[in-house]
Image (cartoon, rainbow, N blue to C red):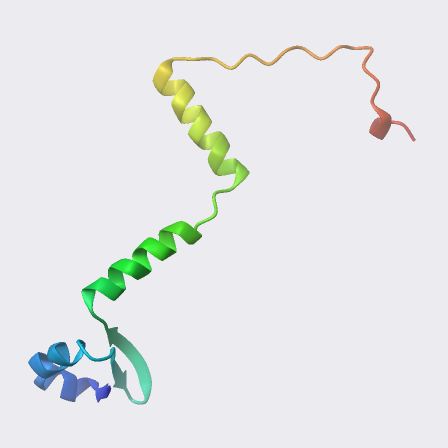
Length: 91
């Protein structure tokens, strides 16, 4: 159901009761300013939102750096050979 903001403020108990049947939309000057939904639906949304967050390669490296710091572990990078063939550097 749609409510005007002032009406929703005056009838808050009714608005809250009505969320059992459908989300309650609150408008101010024909602009949607709030949506009141049942808590289970909101929890489901939060779980879905968390799953949708794609971690980037940068996030993976940040996590690796954090783990190494916690374990006092140092990742050693082997030195590059000076005679290594680099085809992209050639023109």
